[in-house]
Image (tube, rainbow, N blue to C red; front, side):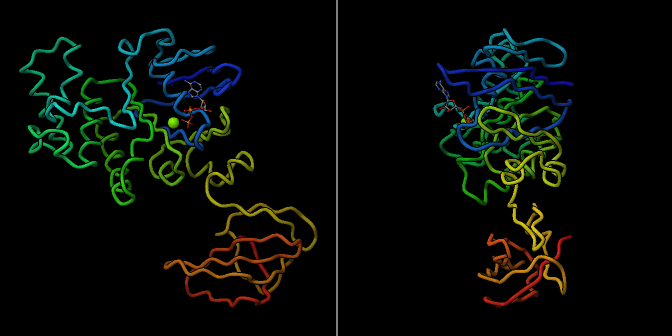
Length: 309
Ligand SMILES: Nc1ncnc2c1ncn2[C@@H]1O[C@H](COP(=O)(O)OP(=O)(O)O)[C@@H](O)[C@H]1O
Ligand SMILES: [Mg+2]
């Protein structure tokens, strides 16, 4: 495995915020570290980047133990949430900044910088100042500034959270494209489940410093390790059928049937454009969510029977 975290732990005072975390990632893969605010994502990333020292455990990149290395010695680069670009420098100077420390000549650095800017469609902005370009463009500058130093692993901490919803979706695709083009191994931190599903070759779900599950998005979605994972990645129903058996299922796995042993009554209907969702009170008193195609119409108060795919 290209990136390996082995039994990483970190406490702040009494509070253990990363607990015995182990995970690994293959070369050229994108891992999304997903979890709610405060679960230890940034702390984990900072330990990989070298900005925080783990209390215990080991970090390996490409077989090399980097646990005790300084941040600048590591074959790892971090794109921070704020981008941390230099506002008084041009786009090109921002991009080539990291090359100064690699003893690369100015002329060569400029050529490299232009080549990288071309790859992300920013050639014409090379001599613009940072404040003269848009948020999405700044995001790309931050990315190529990290990529130009040819790190083995690129770390991104909620890089899209400062962008508006539309741009966030567009940048998702761009980041994925850039990741493939540069064949770079990435750890992408997010609290957005949709972002994690779209971007990740794999997803690692964290809760209160623990790794709950790691796997391909589809695996994690269809075979969640526990209720936390099931509820975190998408919506989940938990109820008992008429016979008292406990059922866990997703809203899209339920349908209106002619017979069966899940009886209920429609309490609310919502039209969401390309689908409808129904809130249904079932026999055990729970409220269950069902998602159906838009042409499947039921009325509030209607008695229904539910089937499960
Ligand atoms: N330098 C610090 N000192 C004390 N507590 C911290 C420090 N950094 C983070 N924490 C705490 O550790 C927990 C995890 O934080 P963090 O890794 O930033 O979470 P996330 O990025 O998932 O939102 C939080 O409860 C946070 O308050
Ligand atoms: Mg964070």
